Length: 206
Image (cartoon, rainbow, N blue to C red; front, side, top):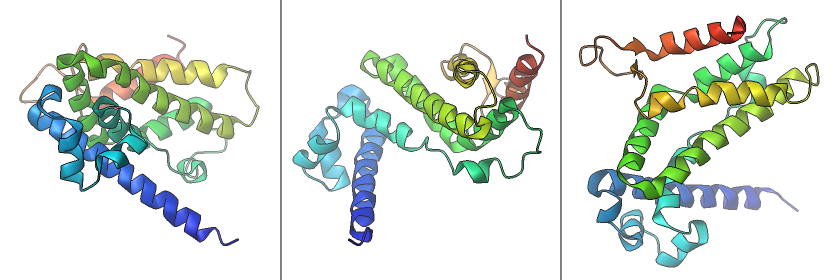
């Protein structure tokens, strides 16, 4: 059987889910979580209430899906093509993070965290986004390491690194995201400085 129809159907499903998630996110920014209902989402996205129910159980889940859908990894071979032969899993993770945490993604994710601070119903979904990123990183690192390291090593490594992003996103650390001006917070360090500092600690064993 020709697999193309299935691929096209899958792509259509992904596009539908993304359109609903994007509309939910934009309405959340414009009106707050209490300022819109699912009917507003489907009206803006051009779908039915039944279609929404096929993808999401509530508007909070749809808002979170906007970020989860943006957090997919590139092909591992492409990610690691430029790494030297003696590269470590830490080097591979650094390369992966640079691809995952683009300026656009970080800015949108911080908006999500800001919304969650205002609307506690969103808070559980922040962990889902970070867990999705961390799980994807673990899978890629396992492909990269190919059994050269002890069981659990890649899990511990990914957990340490992704956990370090939480205080940036909730504003507890004075770190500028890419695209933010230092004029507003002159004492802040850049995201790249923080990233390099974090990996220096990891390389040196804290």
